Image (cartoon, rainbow, N blue to C red):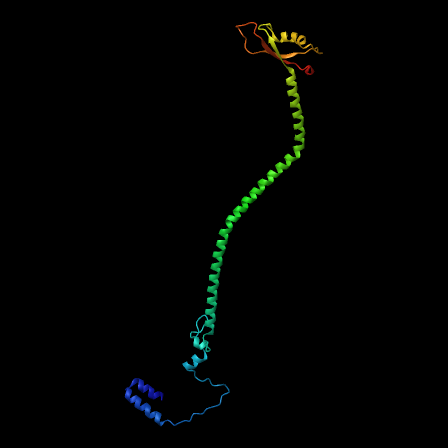
Length: 231
């Protein structure tokens, strides 16, 4: 047979093919013998069998066709849609809560400012109360001082009235050059009183202007006696 193939490659193609055909016919027929094998024979798989046995999947492991992976229907898709709807509903609720929180914050801001103002007022009132309490603690002492000084004023007013003496009915120019000496001389004679020590005059002055038209016109004098207890 190899010889005939060489002729087919080197000679005429038709002759070679005829010779090869005759040689094939002249070869004795041999019946094939099948020996049993312990290994299972793998049957050939067709495309339909491959598609039914293993459906095509994507790189992420998800089936390309929902019918091959989910023969019962679209239940997972329905669950995903429900989850998405619930998520959107929660988002809308959260937006409503945020708007409510913003409104509450805007309403409570003036209240917080008023509370701060009230705290400042309370602090001022506490300070005022402390001052009033301190004053009340010193009030009895101030009352005693007031009573003492009031008595002193009354005594001084009384002494002032007693120490002022007015002399009336003197003629013009009878006092001389020094009024204090004149009044000090006539005072015991006018009053008829004597004192130990003798009365002194702090000051003396004429009452009214000097009359030039008549020297006999009466006028008066005013003098302030000295307190003998003053030394």
